Image (tube, rainbow, N blue to C red; front, side):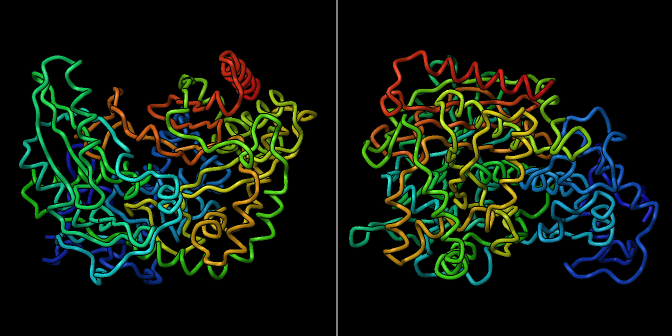
Length: 571
């Protein structure tokens, strides 16, 4: 396959509709193209095509890791040694699909895969996405099992007023009608966006509703910036889990500019889902601009397939991990907080502090090595976690410490499902005990943390499965009676600043009141959330002074120590 043999846009992306037409007419034939996910014939991949794709992959990984250029990305080294974690692999697969149209199933890529092997896969398994709209076959008409993340939220009273939101700049003008048609196709593709909830016998149940009642699109003209925030608060409060909509989109006109505000109840989506929805909304709007039929392929597993699989997992394989979790929960909490004797944390209890690492500081952290200067690169999430561990053990003057770690829940190796394009609340969390780092150098702590993470069974997903989905009271009571970790770490990965075709870009602005102040939160009294956008690492501390018995200045000590630890690692 010659690099110039496929029809592309001026930006270098494939014209999928034209590819499909030429394939159907017989004018486009190659051993590298296949309309089905199946093993390729035993024919060597076209060398020119493979080298072309390999160079493209080097370019994308260089951008992802903020390397100086593609020549600095080795092609025969395992991806794990380049510093890519599971979220990084998902991001890379998305970049490949955006740039080439090739679908890279998560099951075919792991952290031991090399870029050269991935390039060969892209050339040999080129998936042409069907464009026919419509809902997934075999849609359930009964109740849908809850995920662990949904169950945890409902138990804390996160009912109707609790959402995730984003504000976007719009770079090609949209009309409300265009947006409404694209959103209808989006909701038709993702059944989790059609969920309805009801109270049943002191508990809750969920099942699907219709497409049109699941979302709302409105437009408004705003002349003063102060006028916008009350409108955003209203959008959050008008979400309804019982009757719909569960997603609202507000197209904001501000003179010559347009913005798009999206809010979705968090019971039907997690943080990864928000990025999926923005990307696919871009695809749908772009398709309408070209006159293509509106629709998205069923390219990954359904949310219901995930919840049913995890319900079975919780009652079966997850129980083999119970002893491991008992060991983690046996570590006593630091003196700062004990969940067994202190009241639960409410949203209104939380205070916030923000930190930022410049792109050059972020790049320096990506060069941290595991096991010494000649070892593989550590994922930046591992480095941030190691810095947090060192900070906490020095501030609390404690030895072993348990930290609650957030996970995307999308690791294919655990449940066997491709969730890379699945909308829904599939996230999970698990506690992990770390040894005392006081006598360690920063590099030794990074190595110890990296090794500790490799020994977590079932990618940590069995903990929440046992805690929230297992129906054995003895199992649930043992887990819930143990002290909850005082510290929580959540690395949310790389946040793209622009959508696939450039229709949307992230806008930093207030998003309104997204939660009920009286509702409980699923977090420790000290919580660190990190993500990377535009090369900048964004760090947000969420903490409850009341539960930590802090008077005010303590958070400044923590943020200063944390930055000092990161600076020491970047040297």
